[in-house]
Amino acid sequence: YAAASIGGIWKTEDGGLTWRSLVDQQVPLIYGGLVLDPANPDVLYATLGEFDGQVSGVYGFLANGIMRTDDGGATWALLGADTFNGASVTALVFDDQGNMYASSGQMSVYYGPPDQPEFGIFKSADGGATWERLAACSDFGNCTPTTGGENRSYLGGFFDLDLSSNGTLFASVCVVQCYTTSIIRSTDGGSSWDTLDVSDALDTWATENEVDVIYLDDN
Image (cartoon, rainbow, N blue to C red; front, side, top):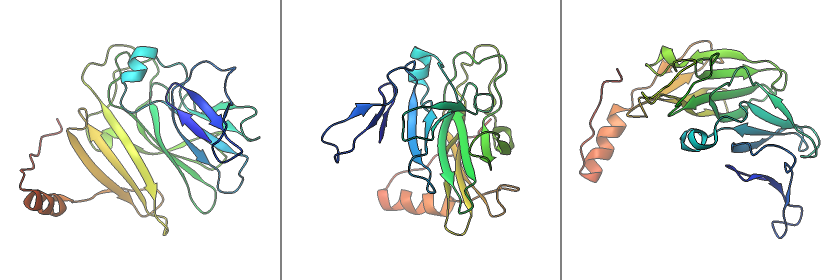
């Protein structure tokens, strides 16, 4: 399977020699990626939106959330439209119990919908039907969109999310067009988060590459 930004979702059954489209009958949604359910190879999740925001600025938000197929791409259903309204789903991961974790963000939302929720990290225990918020963007910086109007301030949000083998969640957060970036960690399933101090690693990198690292105030 392969997903293209505004090029649809494709499937090959001969190792990539030939491909066929799975979404010709849908509007040209902006796809950010594909995630295969580790428990069922016929179940796939296609994340909608691009974190960059330029494509959405041109084509608009034709749909927000996650597209799910239970039959290998023959049919699709939209999940999480309210949770991810006006945002890109930037990452989607599974834990060993089948729970899903997703992050949302958007580096530039020119016109936010009236009911746009705050960017965040979310958990679903029912295949994406419902979502529980684990973190909000305002917990780590000023990247909350102005709903129902123009957003020229350049936002940010959560642009990556990963889960380690011991269940620890890691996410990257950026504000003000990612001029301020940090890495956060949760060891209790998202109930609490710590911001990691990576200054020593950055200083070592700067010394080895003979460059200066400039730290900016995220406000």
